[in-house]
Length: 209
Ligand code: PRP
Ligand code: URA
Image (tube, rainbow, N blue to C red; front, side, top):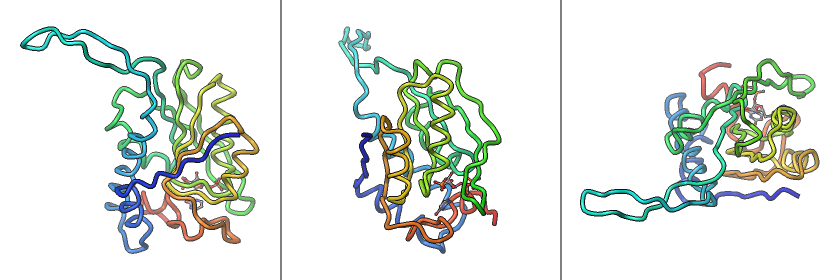
C-alpha cells in the first residue's frame, strides 16, 4: 500500500493558510501555490542518491557531491497543476515536464481527458504527478493510468490539499504510489469539493469562474 506523507513544515502550513482564505487574490494565490510546491519538492527530493565527484576549486581539488541515479519528470494535471510547475522548476531546473489534460465533468465528477504529452523516457525517470487538489481522486488516478500506459514505473503524486475519499480511492487504484500532501482535509461535500479546502484551484489560479 502506498504511503501518505503530510508535510507539517511550518513554512508550508503558513503559506497554505493564505491560499485557503477566500480573500486571497489571483496574483497572491499563484505566487504562494508555486512557493508551496517548491518547498514540498525540497522535502520530496530528500532521498535522492548522491555520488562523489572531484572538482577543481580555485584553491585545490575537492571531493564534492552531485545528484546521482534516476532523472526526474514532472507531470502537472491541466489546468490547475500548471500552478505548481514554476515553483518546482526553481528547485529542479533540469526536470522534464509532461502534461496531462483532464477536467472533471461537473455532473458525473468523472475525469475527461483532452491532452497528453509526456517526455520520451518516462520509464527511466522518477515521475511526479502534480495537482493542487485530490478530491474524488478520479483525475489523479486517470493521470497515473496514462503514465503507466506509457511505461512509467516510478511515480509519485504531489497535491496541496486532499480529501480522505480521494486518498482511499488512489490507494485502491494504485497501491504502489506514495502520496505527498500539504494537508489532508475533512471530507468532500455533495458537489465533490474538498471541505474546508480552498475552493476551485484552477479558477483561483487563473481568475476564471
Ligand atoms: C480540479 C483539480 C483536479 C481535480 C480534482 O480540476 O485541479 O485536477 O479537479 O478532482 P478529482 O480528484 O475529483 O478528480 P478541474 O477538473 O476543476 O479542472 P481545471 O484544473 O481545469 O480547473
Ligand atoms: N477541484 C478543486 O479545484 N477543488 C476542490 O475542492 C475539488 C476539486
